[in-house]
Length: 210
Image (cartoon, rainbow, N blue to C red; front, side):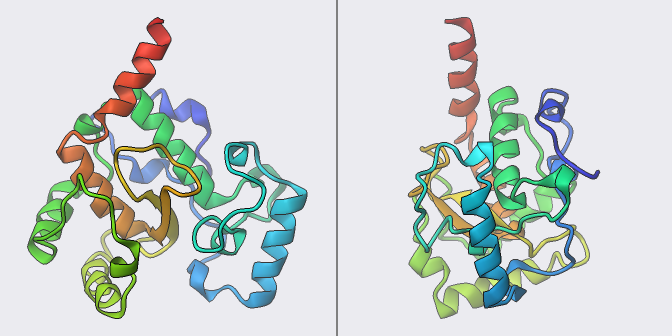
């Protein structure tokens, strides 16, 4: 699917999975392969042409999280929205329309969830993620091993995206962590299975009826 306009979110059924609704990056490489020069060009482009979906974030974003050096921007006029931010915005819109506990993010959610529980028995989906621990040398190695199991099973498993540090909050400058897409799937599948994202749907529906 070439893009993911917001209108698609309203047509997502509980038995459908999110994977096919995510925008595919134009460049066949991970964000970490971008050069310093490209990072600078992306940052300049963000400042000159900030997308609407970034309006809730302050102009100066913390380097650790939402700088455009961590956002891959399409160079096509028809896709002039940072891919990572569009993933974030699309997922949130879906959670407002469908209870997370009924949502499937991939075709193999069950396998991913069981694998997460096996490889990360200490993981608590309700807890706030310790980013320093997750991105430590040992943490990176554990997650790398976990993610490599899906190299041929999940499209763009290692492309960058953003995941909330805690399921209790909305996306925001201080509430997100840049992570590979496979980490996002594993964490959000666990949160959805435990009903931790259902409040987003309930809040959105309450706002509609008020």
